Amino acid sequence: MTLYLIAILACAAFLFVVAPLFEPIQTKLNIFQENSTTALDAIEDLDLEYASGKVSEEGYKAVRSELVKDAALSLAKTQSCGHCRRCKVPLKSADLFCGNCGERATS
Ligand SMILES: [Zn+2]
Image (cartoon, rainbow, N blue to C red):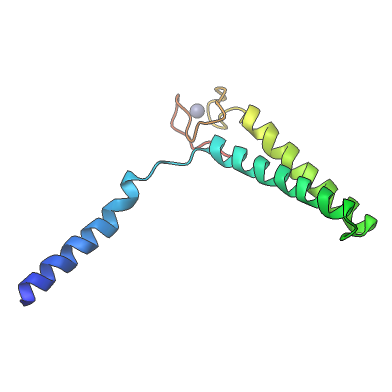
């Protein structure tokens, strides 16, 4: 009985450790697209709340300008992620690492 429990616990621990290896890797592009979508959704919600009178004009303008900045920054990052800081090779927006030298791409 004890061996049976140990075997079950060992299998559970093994699955717990191995499970993340089979999850899809979220690329930087996915993250930027998700961030821009979130910001655009928040702008839409804020516009609706302002139109219904739930938000003051002062608060609306301040929050909206920040959300627009966030959305624009995220959208810009989906377009280009710049160059590798080590070898200066252009990087694609979805790259996590430089294909030339292996340097980690920074956001
Ligand atoms: Zn490089």
